[in-house]
Image 1 (cartoon, one colour):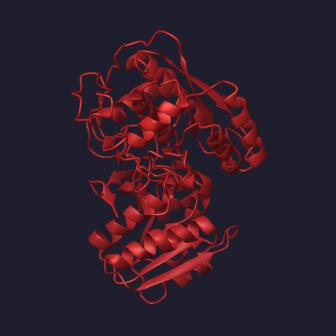
Image 2: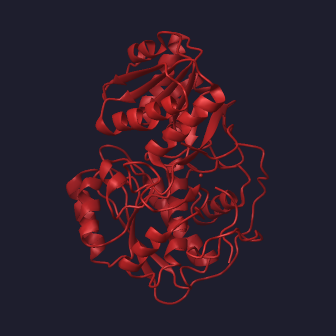
Image 3: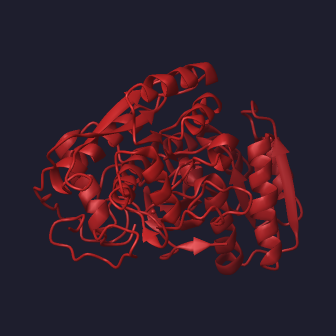
Length: 419
């Protein structure tokens, strides 16, 4: 059974369900990219609508949990929960479920604290899930260890914290910020050929790790030796000073490692300083709200995105767009939504290879055996814990490079990049 109506199945290994077709790509965790709007605004692919097949699942449902901060003092990410629900509907109505059985999504929405996320884990454990998907869980330090102790596999769609990066029960189908910026660094070195690079990052342990371990080291390995490391405070909003510091000495490329609002502030500072350097950011900064907040300075900026762009014409992207139109038209084609949808579909395929898809132990074993699987709308994944040095949860370190041109994101790299 192929994922998309009328599309031929693509090759899969013996460990992967025979239901894979086109290519696909990023979370943010670390985050994911977006095209700045609805479908049809990026690339030159065939954007004609497709009709989703009908292949309904029957029988006893298999429960999958979701922990996501729909609303919290630190942010609202309701589109992730909505996209996960749409993915489950798509799997159950069009893909025949998991081995013919429907999925049931159990959603818990904490408030951004570790205690609330731990309570969510306890609530979901009572429903006996085969696996738990992580949306954007700001309190993952509370939820992930509790799930690990219970032997429940955790599959984050937007991993942002150390526990999601390294927990033995965590399996990310997207590269997150560390993987995507390392891939972006390869693109910078190979395609932009800079004389000097400045790496700007929030002064926190995760961003510093990514800056030093997955950008600086990659650039140096590629022969870029003139590198300036510029840290700035997590609460700084006027970034004219740090950007000015980054531009010293003839910097021609700046790589930023920060969350969305930080990217907008960097771009504003770039614009005010009249910088002509090229800027590359994680895919989370390609969110339409961030691009809008960044203003005219966003023109020409680059983003390391973790999935294929909406509107690309790829069959899986078109299936995603058709599912949003069918199940919930209020869902924006943001990287968060796309990452959640793709993660749930990819998880369902892995579950279908498990000896008992409703049993956490069997699903965990299937995840560990996953090798060379093309994830839905995303890169190839191999969950051997070795894809990204020191961060065992990541099953890939691949990303694509998008550039913001004339109000649209364009896949300027045209291929998957990887350090």
